[in-house]
Length: 218
Length: 299
Image (cartoon, rainbow over all chains, first blue to last red; front, side, top):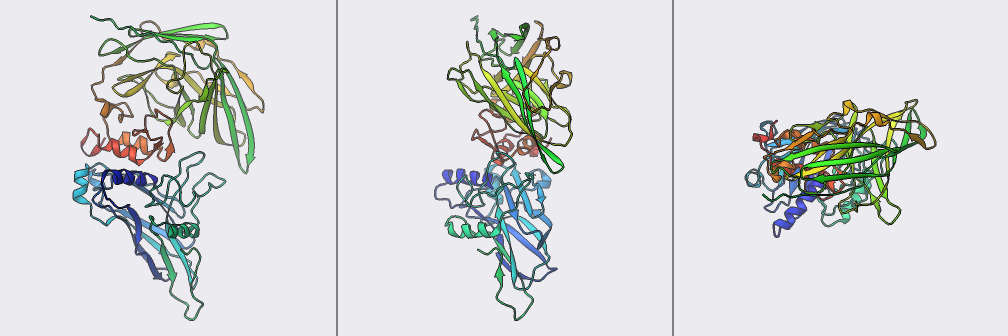
């Protein structure tokens, strides 16, 4: 995400009046049942006449509740199969952490011709697993920190080159550590520039139960 | 014809090696923190006259001379010839960092370019790491005083290894650094080899205390006077900087070398930090895709 942010910042400088580009998941909320398969679009908006030449995004979710069954890159940065874009997605880095990364080989003029606003850059499909009645889970744009003294990457749609909210701590083994969705979502809500990109997945069963409790609610 | 003579001197790296290691058990693995190399420069001078670079190294009082001709299209070499070290260390080594200090007020962090898959030597030769290894360039920052200065060098790296793992072998190569058309080359000077496979290993023992590592000068053969490195590249600076695998094109293989280390901090001059913003990321890759010399950036 940091690299996306950097690109977008450059575009903001280069394109007068351009809005801050943000990535969101669409739909932003779904009511589902265990066993459902959910399709989510990763959408960039606020291009304001600028183009996206590359992106590198992490998407966090609770692997105990959701299972990623696949993802498809859209052609917004060019067709990967025809060499218009290069796919460097790491895929599922660890359970609950998906990385998507694409670098376009198209010129800015060519990108202008193929990109719209909003722009769908990928579609994710997830299966809903164990989700108790009245509970919810969150899929969130996240950031990651490389082992050791790696660079931090800011959340999607944020201009700053630092983590905001703060970067997650690296776990003991040095592997990726999924974000705590609540912290992320809460802080995102405070940030006027960043838009929440959380998918609230509720279990629809269990009539008469208490109001849904959001485990990691914004 | 105007004869341009460039004479430069520089301090040299790696005269005495001291290895030190601290070991801490963590479940089935060991967090091994190595002080991989403590280097102390004694005497070493590299001189460039026209296109010939001559380095004089001293190892425990034993002098080793290395001379090579760096041949460019103009027949002369412009710019300073520094003497960075190229190391081959385990691929799993991380947090590679180093410092230099002359004890007289000149000190700081060494420039370290880790996880390199290719280090260009000249137009047709490159250094590549062995299986399970990575190459690391260690260099002094720009504008560091070189003439008449003796620096102490300290280089650390970390590695997670299985319990009971033996000593860590590394390899070190002194090079001359030369920039042509925006692309930086590292010509081997000591030992005078063009492959790390030909280099003797330096073994870092497992010890809680510092230990001397002895380099045998007989394995440190300098370049002979008839050693030539050639720099006749036709690529522009615009393209050359992105030809990271040194095969005279820019394609997705070069882009992959950037993306392989994405989201990492870059020391000044790291060849993969194309936009020189201090971090290697997809934006650097994007810049190079716009410089691809093949359709669709295909290899």
